Image (cartoon, rainbow, N blue to C red; front, side, top):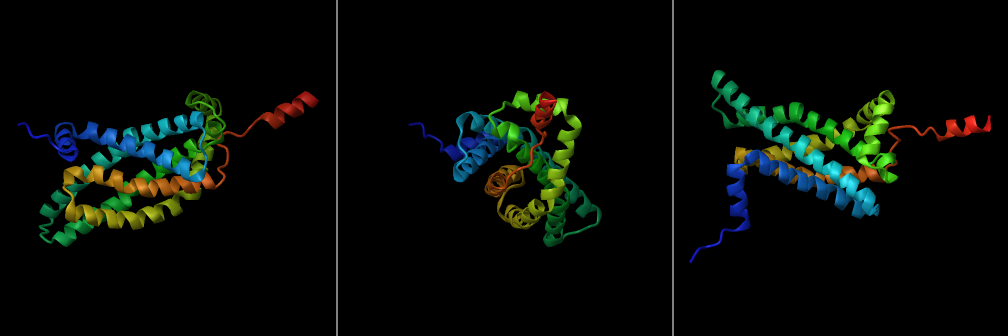
Length: 227
């Protein structure tokens, strides 16, 4: 009789064979759930809008956040390992501290910036009003300076608040990973762990009225018509 493997065993087997692909798919699903859950909890449910937002979050989770986790922690572990050998460090606490500092001051700031940029776009008036991603891209292209300026303002305005919460949670998550998780599975663990935090931050942005990434030109057009 062939014994069926559990879902976890099957997942681990796939993770071993195709680590990056499995991590990308996992990150995409978790980020998509982030948007669905935050929309449900804030009562902002409109299927046409939600589908566009979920698609954006799927892209963010799979193509941005997961590669940062995968390659960021992979190279962080390698660099710390080489530095510890070069400096002849044998203390596990010292090695763990170096990994933690690398996570807090290199990986986390990058992730926070991309998260704010993504959430600002996801919660932009263009998407909220039912516009498509293509419409968003066209508006961004036609008003690139204003679009990029407003995104920059969004990062400047929210970075400290987001980074502070990430700083605290990262300290806990990295310590847990160092003691209980295999290095090859850190990216998966962090994707799962940060989903709750990112969902809370997404809810915060949805509840706080976001400034438009592209200012409406209707007022100007109305004035022209009146003249």
